[in-house]
Amino acid sequence: MIKVAVAGCAGRMGRTVCDTVRAADDMELACGIDPHRPEVDFPVYPTVAAALESWAFDVLVDFTQPSVVADNLRVALPAGVDCVVGTTGLSNETLEELAALAPAGTCLFYAPNFTTGAVLMMEFAKAAAPYFPEAEVIEFHHCNKKDAPSGTAVRTAQIIAEARDGRASEAPGKETEIEGAEGARGALVDGVPVHSVRSMGYVASQEVVFGSLGQTLSIRHDSWDRTSYMPGVLLGIRSVGSCEGLVVGLENFMA
Ligand code: NAD
Image (cartoon, rainbow, N blue to C red; front, side, top):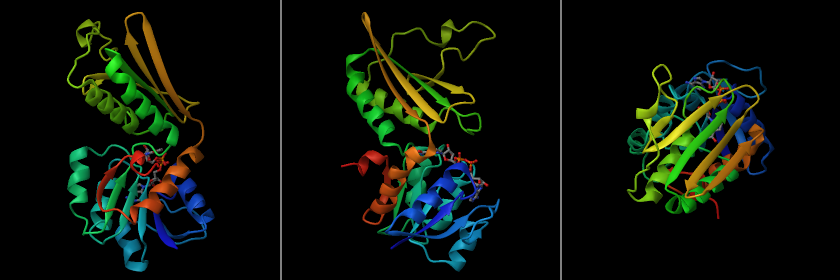
Protein backbone atom coordinates (compact mmCIF):
# COMPACT_ATOMS: atom_id res chain seq x y z
CA MET A 1 0.00 0.00 0.00
CA ILE A 2 1.28 3.47 -0.85
CA LYS A 3 0.74 5.80 2.13
CA VAL A 4 -0.31 9.23 0.88
CA ALA A 5 -0.61 12.62 2.62
CA VAL A 6 -2.52 15.42 0.87
CA ALA A 7 -1.51 19.05 1.42
CA GLY A 8 -4.38 21.42 0.67
CA CYS A 9 -6.93 18.75 1.65
CA ALA A 10 -9.61 21.38 2.41
CA GLY A 11 -9.31 22.94 -1.05
CA ARG A 12 -11.12 22.18 -4.30
CA MET A 13 -8.42 19.92 -5.74
CA GLY A 14 -7.27 18.49 -2.39
CA ARG A 15 -10.77 17.26 -1.50
CA THR A 16 -11.06 15.41 -4.81
CA VAL A 17 -7.56 13.93 -4.40
CA CYS A 18 -8.45 12.62 -0.90
CA ASP A 19 -11.61 10.91 -2.26
CA THR A 20 -9.62 9.43 -5.17
CA VAL A 21 -6.78 8.10 -2.98
CA ARG A 22 -9.29 6.52 -0.60
CA ALA A 23 -11.01 4.77 -3.50
CA ALA A 24 -7.72 3.34 -4.89
CA ASP A 25 -7.03 -0.30 -3.94
CA ASP A 26 -3.27 0.17 -3.70
CA MET A 27 -3.27 3.41 -1.64
CA GLU A 28 -4.02 4.53 1.87
CA LEU A 29 -4.80 8.13 2.85
CA ALA A 30 -2.44 8.65 5.82
CA CYS A 31 -3.52 12.21 6.64
CA GLY A 32 -4.40 15.62 5.30
CA ILE A 33 -2.50 18.89 5.77
CA ASP A 34 -4.31 22.21 5.72
CA PRO A 35 -4.40 25.23 8.07
CA HIS A 36 -8.16 25.45 7.35
CA ARG A 37 -9.09 22.14 8.93
CA PRO A 38 -12.05 20.53 7.16
CA GLU A 39 -14.52 18.37 9.07
CA VAL A 40 -13.40 14.96 7.85
CA ASP A 41 -12.93 11.47 9.31
CA PHE A 42 -9.16 11.34 8.82
CA PRO A 43 -6.40 13.20 10.69
CA VAL A 44 -5.55 16.69 9.42
CA TYR A 45 -2.47 18.69 10.47
CA PRO A 46 -1.82 22.41 9.98
CA THR A 47 1.69 21.94 8.57
CA VAL A 48 3.80 19.30 6.81
CA ALA A 49 6.21 19.30 9.77
CA ALA A 50 3.38 18.50 12.21
CA ALA A 51 2.15 15.70 9.94
CA LEU A 52 5.64 14.17 9.67
CA GLU A 53 5.96 14.16 13.46
CA SER A 54 2.83 12.00 13.76
CA TRP A 55 2.65 9.90 10.57
CA ALA A 56 4.99 8.09 8.22
CA PHE A 57 3.91 8.50 4.59
CA ASP A 58 5.53 7.61 1.27
CA VAL A 59 4.11 10.35 -0.93
CA LEU A 60 3.04 13.95 -0.33
CA VAL A 61 0.54 15.32 -2.86
CA ASP A 62 0.49 19.13 -2.88
CA PHE A 63 -2.42 21.17 -4.25
CA THR A 64 -2.05 24.29 -2.10
CA GLN A 65 -1.07 27.81 -3.14
CA PRO A 66 1.86 29.26 -5.08
CA SER A 67 2.94 31.18 -1.94
CA VAL A 68 3.27 28.10 0.31
CA VAL A 69 4.14 25.10 -1.88
CA ALA A 70 7.93 25.67 -1.82
CA ASP A 71 7.96 25.77 2.00
CA ASN A 72 5.98 22.50 2.14
CA LEU A 73 8.49 20.82 -0.17
CA ARG A 74 11.45 22.20 1.81
CA VAL A 75 10.17 20.11 4.74
CA ALA A 76 9.00 16.96 2.90
CA LEU A 77 11.86 16.37 0.44
CA PRO A 78 14.79 16.32 2.94
CA ALA A 79 12.72 13.81 4.96
CA GLY A 80 12.84 11.45 1.95
CA VAL A 81 9.14 11.80 1.05
CA ASP A 82 8.39 11.59 -2.69
CA CYS A 83 6.35 14.63 -3.75
CA VAL A 84 3.62 14.88 -6.40
CA VAL A 85 2.99 18.57 -6.99
CA GLY A 86 0.12 20.17 -8.88
CA THR A 87 0.34 23.64 -7.35
CA THR A 88 1.38 25.98 -10.13
CA GLY A 89 3.60 29.05 -10.04
CA LEU A 90 6.98 27.39 -9.31
CA SER A 91 9.82 28.49 -11.61
CA ASN A 92 12.25 25.96 -13.12
CA GLU A 93 15.01 27.42 -10.92
CA THR A 94 12.97 26.90 -7.74
CA LEU A 95 12.04 23.35 -8.77
CA GLU A 96 15.71 22.52 -9.33
CA GLU A 97 16.71 24.12 -6.03
CA LEU A 98 14.02 22.10 -4.20
CA ALA A 99 14.90 18.82 -5.94
CA ALA A 100 18.50 19.27 -4.76
CA LEU A 101 17.23 18.98 -1.17
CA ALA A 102 16.00 15.42 -1.79
CA PRO A 103 18.19 12.50 -0.70
CA ALA A 104 19.08 9.81 -3.26
CA GLY A 105 16.03 7.77 -4.26
CA THR A 106 13.54 10.59 -3.56
CA CYS A 107 11.56 12.21 -6.37
CA LEU A 108 10.02 15.65 -6.90
CA PHE A 109 7.37 15.28 -9.59
CA TYR A 110 5.69 18.46 -10.84
CA ALA A 111 2.98 18.49 -13.48
CA PRO A 112 1.61 21.85 -14.62
CA ASN A 113 -1.39 19.86 -15.83
CA PHE A 114 -2.53 16.42 -14.71
CA THR A 115 -5.09 15.86 -17.47
CA THR A 116 -4.03 13.48 -20.24
CA GLY A 117 -5.88 15.69 -22.75
CA ALA A 118 -3.80 18.77 -21.89
CA VAL A 119 -0.58 16.76 -22.15
CA LEU A 120 -1.67 15.64 -25.63
CA MET A 121 -2.61 19.25 -26.51
CA MET A 122 0.97 20.27 -25.67
CA GLU A 123 2.37 17.37 -27.73
CA PHE A 124 0.22 18.41 -30.72
CA ALA A 125 1.35 22.04 -30.26
CA LYS A 126 4.98 20.89 -30.30
CA ALA A 127 4.35 19.00 -33.55
CA ALA A 128 2.60 22.00 -35.20
CA ALA A 129 4.99 24.78 -34.08
CA PRO A 130 7.72 24.23 -36.74
CA TYR A 131 5.14 24.56 -39.55
CA PHE A 132 3.37 27.76 -38.41
CA PRO A 133 5.20 31.11 -38.07
CA GLU A 134 2.65 32.45 -35.58
CA ALA A 135 1.20 30.99 -32.38
CA GLU A 136 -0.78 32.44 -29.48
CA VAL A 137 -2.08 30.75 -26.32
CA ILE A 138 -5.46 31.66 -24.81
CA GLU A 139 -6.31 30.07 -21.46
CA PHE A 140 -9.66 30.20 -19.63
CA HIS A 141 -10.08 29.54 -15.87
CA HIS A 142 -12.51 30.04 -12.99
CA CYS A 143 -12.37 33.35 -11.08
CA ASN A 144 -10.69 31.90 -7.97
CA LYS A 145 -7.47 30.97 -9.73
CA LYS A 146 -4.62 32.74 -7.93
CA ASP A 147 -2.02 32.87 -10.71
CA ALA A 148 -2.04 34.16 -14.29
CA PRO A 149 -1.03 32.92 -16.74
CA SER A 150 -1.66 29.28 -15.84
CA GLY A 151 1.22 26.83 -15.46
CA THR A 152 -0.09 24.93 -18.49
CA ALA A 153 -0.06 28.09 -20.63
CA VAL A 154 3.50 28.90 -19.58
CA ARG A 155 4.64 25.34 -20.33
CA THR A 156 2.85 25.35 -23.71
CA ALA A 157 4.52 28.64 -24.68
CA GLN A 158 7.93 27.24 -23.67
CA ILE A 159 7.33 24.09 -25.74
CA ILE A 160 6.32 26.15 -28.80
CA ALA A 161 9.40 28.38 -28.41
CA GLU A 162 11.69 25.33 -28.17
CA ALA A 163 10.07 23.74 -31.25
CA ARG A 164 10.54 27.01 -33.20
CA ASP A 165 14.27 26.62 -32.74
CA GLY A 166 15.06 30.33 -32.49
CA ARG A 167 12.66 31.56 -35.21
CA ALA A 168 10.84 34.70 -34.02
CA SER A 169 7.21 35.70 -34.57
CA GLU A 170 6.57 38.46 -37.10
CA ALA A 171 3.10 39.32 -35.77
CA PRO A 172 2.62 42.86 -34.41
CA GLY A 173 3.43 43.05 -30.69
CA LYS A 174 3.21 45.41 -27.73
CA GLU A 175 4.25 48.39 -29.87
CA THR A 176 0.76 48.29 -31.44
CA GLU A 177 -1.13 48.43 -28.12
CA ILE A 178 -3.06 51.68 -27.81
CA GLU A 179 -2.58 53.93 -24.77
CA GLY A 180 -4.79 52.86 -21.88
CA ALA A 181 -5.18 49.31 -23.24
CA GLU A 182 -1.69 47.96 -22.55
CA GLY A 183 -1.72 44.18 -22.36
CA ALA A 184 -4.05 43.78 -25.34
CA ARG A 185 -1.42 41.66 -27.11
CA GLY A 186 -1.02 39.44 -24.06
CA ALA A 187 1.99 38.55 -21.92
CA LEU A 188 5.04 37.35 -23.81
CA VAL A 189 6.31 33.98 -22.52
CA ASP A 190 9.48 33.02 -24.40
CA GLY A 191 8.23 35.21 -27.26
CA VAL A 192 4.76 33.60 -27.43
CA PRO A 193 1.76 35.83 -26.54
CA VAL A 194 -0.35 34.33 -23.73
CA HIS A 195 -3.85 35.64 -22.91
CA SER A 196 -5.60 34.76 -19.61
CA VAL A 197 -9.41 34.80 -19.39
CA ARG A 198 -10.97 34.56 -15.90
CA SER A 199 -14.70 33.95 -15.67
CA MET A 200 -17.44 32.10 -13.89
CA GLY A 201 -18.44 28.98 -15.80
CA TYR A 202 -14.95 27.65 -16.54
CA VAL A 203 -12.86 25.05 -14.74
CA ALA A 204 -9.81 25.03 -17.03
CA SER A 205 -9.62 25.37 -20.81
CA GLN A 206 -6.91 26.31 -23.24
CA GLU A 207 -6.74 27.04 -26.95
CA VAL A 208 -3.55 27.30 -28.98
CA VAL A 209 -4.03 29.17 -32.27
CA PHE A 210 -1.40 28.67 -34.98
CA GLY A 211 -1.27 30.85 -38.08
CA SER A 212 0.43 30.50 -41.44
CA LEU A 213 -0.21 31.89 -44.95
CA GLY A 214 -3.97 31.58 -45.57
CA GLN A 215 -4.58 29.05 -42.78
CA THR A 216 -5.01 28.72 -39.03
CA LEU A 217 -4.96 25.65 -36.83
CA SER A 218 -6.66 25.66 -33.39
CA ILE A 219 -5.96 23.04 -30.75
CA ARG A 220 -8.31 23.17 -27.78
CA HIS A 221 -8.66 21.28 -24.53
CA ASP A 222 -11.45 21.70 -21.93
CA SER A 223 -11.51 20.38 -18.38
CA TRP A 224 -15.11 20.50 -17.26
CA ASP A 225 -14.65 18.78 -13.91
CA ARG A 226 -11.81 18.30 -11.37
CA THR A 227 -12.16 14.53 -11.72
CA SER A 228 -10.37 14.98 -15.08
CA TYR A 229 -7.10 15.45 -13.15
CA MET A 230 -7.41 12.33 -11.02
CA PRO A 231 -6.10 9.59 -13.38
CA GLY A 232 -2.97 11.72 -13.80
CA VAL A 233 -2.59 12.26 -10.04
CA LEU A 234 -2.90 8.50 -9.42
CA LEU A 235 -0.34 7.83 -12.17
CA GLY A 236 2.03 10.30 -10.49
CA ILE A 237 1.61 8.72 -7.04
CA ARG A 238 2.21 5.24 -8.49
CA SER A 239 5.26 6.36 -10.52
CA VAL A 240 7.32 8.53 -8.13
CA GLY A 241 8.45 5.58 -6.01
CA SER A 242 10.60 4.28 -8.87
CA CYS A 243 12.08 7.68 -9.81
CA GLU A 244 14.48 10.16 -8.23
CA GLY A 245 15.39 13.81 -8.66
CA LEU A 246 13.22 16.29 -10.59
CA VAL A 247 10.61 15.04 -13.07
CA VAL A 248 8.48 17.69 -14.82
CA GLY A 249 5.40 16.77 -16.84
CA LEU A 250 2.92 13.89 -16.82
CA GLU A 251 4.15 12.88 -20.29
CA ASN A 252 7.15 11.27 -18.56
CA PHE A 253 4.84 8.64 -17.07
CA MET A 254 2.36 8.21 -19.96
CA ALA A 255 3.23 5.08 -21.93
P1 NAD B 1 -7.95 26.07 -3.25
O1 NAD B 1 -7.71 27.51 -2.90
O2 NAD B 1 -9.35 25.56 -3.37
O3 NAD B 1 -7.21 25.13 -2.18
C1 NAD B 1 -5.94 25.42 -1.65
C2 NAD B 1 -5.92 24.84 -0.24
O4 NAD B 1 -4.57 24.93 0.25
C3 NAD B 1 -6.81 25.60 0.75
O5 NAD B 1 -7.66 24.69 1.43
C4 NAD B 1 -5.80 26.22 1.72
O6 NAD B 1 -6.30 26.34 3.06
C5 NAD B 1 -4.68 25.21 1.64
N1 NAD B 1 -3.41 25.69 2.17
C6 NAD B 1 -2.95 26.97 2.24
N2 NAD B 1 -1.73 27.00 2.82
C7 NAD B 1 -1.41 25.71 3.09
C8 NAD B 1 -0.27 25.08 3.67
N3 NAD B 1 0.81 25.78 4.08
N4 NAD B 1 -0.27 23.72 3.80
C9 NAD B 1 -1.33 22.99 3.39
N5 NAD B 1 -2.44 23.54 2.85
C10 NAD B 1 -2.47 24.88 2.68
O7 NAD B 1 -7.14 25.83 -4.62
P2 NAD B 1 -7.39 24.69 -5.72
O8 NAD B 1 -8.36 25.15 -6.74
O9 NAD B 1 -7.60 23.38 -5.04
O10 NAD B 1 -5.95 24.69 -6.45
C11 NAD B 1 -4.76 24.43 -5.72
C12 NAD B 1 -3.56 24.62 -6.63
O11 NAD B 1 -3.57 23.59 -7.63
C13 NAD B 1 -3.51 25.95 -7.39
O12 NAD B 1 -2.17 26.40 -7.49
C14 NAD B 1 -4.02 25.58 -8.78
O13 NAD B 1 -3.53 26.43 -9.79
C15 NAD B 1 -3.41 24.20 -8.91
N6 NAD B 1 -4.04 23.31 -9.88
C16 NAD B 1 -3.20 22.55 -10.61
C17 NAD B 1 -3.72 21.62 -11.49
C18 NAD B 1 -2.76 20.76 -12.26
O14 NAD B 1 -3.22 19.93 -13.08
N7 NAD B 1 -1.46 20.88 -12.06
C19 NAD B 1 -5.09 21.49 -11.63
C20 NAD B 1 -5.94 22.28 -10.88
C21 NAD B 1 -5.39 23.19 -9.98
